[in-house]
Every structure is written in C-alpha cells, then in structure tokens.
Length: 107
Image (tube, rainbow, N blue to C red; front, side):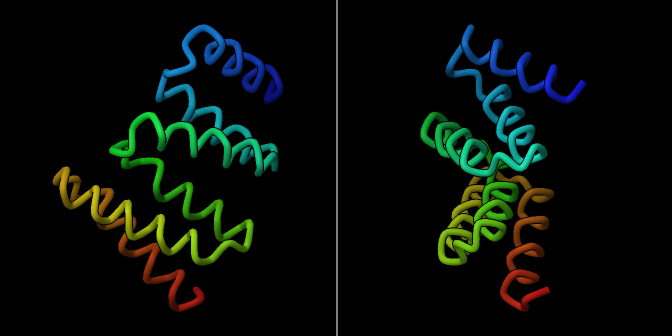
C-alpha cells in the first residue's frame, strides 16, 4: 500500500512538477520510506518554488537533524521562524520555536 502512495504521488508530480502540495507530500513519503536524500531533494525543490511554504520548515529541519547536518537544521528553523512571523502564522511559529529550542538543548 505504501509503495502505491509513493508511485501515485510521483505520477501526480509528473503531471504538474510545480504542485507544491504534491512536492511536500512526496518529501514526507520519501522520509517515511527512509529515502532521505530523495526527501531532501523534494523539500529543496519546494523551497525553491515557494519559500513561504511555512509547513515545510519544521520537517526540513528535522530531516537535516536526521542527516546530522546541524548547521543546516538551525538555519532552516531560523528561516521558518522569520517566515512564520512575516506571514502571521502563530501556530507554525510556535512549533518552529519550540522545535528549535529542543534542538539547541539536545532534547
């Protein structure tokens, strides 16, 4: 079933390579399948297309942590926090600030 989801999302992305939700969902699915480099590529593409896609920053930073790229994780949290502030997205702002604090504390 999970492979079906991955294949389906890839098909949707082939139909519209700029579909931000599909890129996000595909990155999530790659992460779920431990295909971390593929996930990273999808998140980077999404960020290139729409850096204001605030929901991506939490997951991208978590992926950088998993890949042991701490400087990138910190920078991603900080970028997401600034974007959430600018967009007035208090929910995303709270999640990103909390995750950044936990990251910095080694929690």
